[in-house]
Image (cartoon, rainbow, N blue to C red):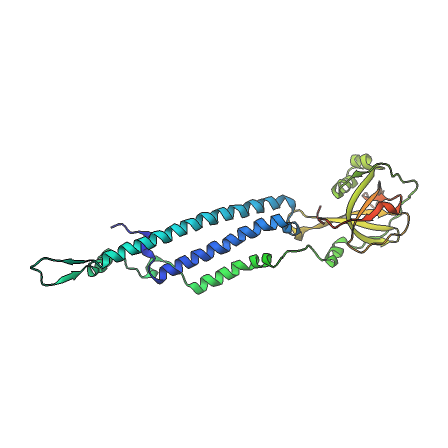
Length: 301
């Protein structure tokens, strides 16, 4: 006698099995949905470097596909179990008469009952090695649901606090820069990485020295006519973020709030750091009108 998988699912056992399957499908599906939505809404920018954000999207989409396949499988399994139960129940209640010489009518239920035991198919749930304790199932699902719940309430909704960023930035001191004549002609958009790499590469320094650049970042005051413009760089995730800083020198005092986003246009210079072989990238502004507040953008380079 072939032993059908559905023979495992009788009564409470079947209800526990399908309850566990449905809860698993629901919670895992939410994980996939959260991954896709975090990518779409830009929430991943607060926690992951750009090169890892697309894999999260693809992983979330893959999870949703697997969940859909599993949902169809469970739905079909439930239908097969219902059909099996209907046919089995009909057979068990069919009576057979044993002819005129037989003085009794034999209920076929008895035959089926001992036939099952004769083949060793005792339906004690413990014999199948399963444990569908619903209390444990619900506890496990609640634990798995916790990170999804954070997403549903909007976390992460921002990056580091300004106080934490200030600790990363450290205490910058004003530098002596011979301003002289400052060019305002032209202006190419530059990145923090460009200027940072040039500070350690002589050929790149020579290529950028004296060029007029335009760059945007967050404001942090140092002195009346100097401030730090910065963004953050993630190698992998937010916890390994480091600040990318450019020193800005203005002809007169300028004031913005700490953390404001500003755009700067000025001449690029590289100033030797005292008692060091390193260079500090500096942008010297010809006129304060070349420094203006702009809408906030992604703080990560």
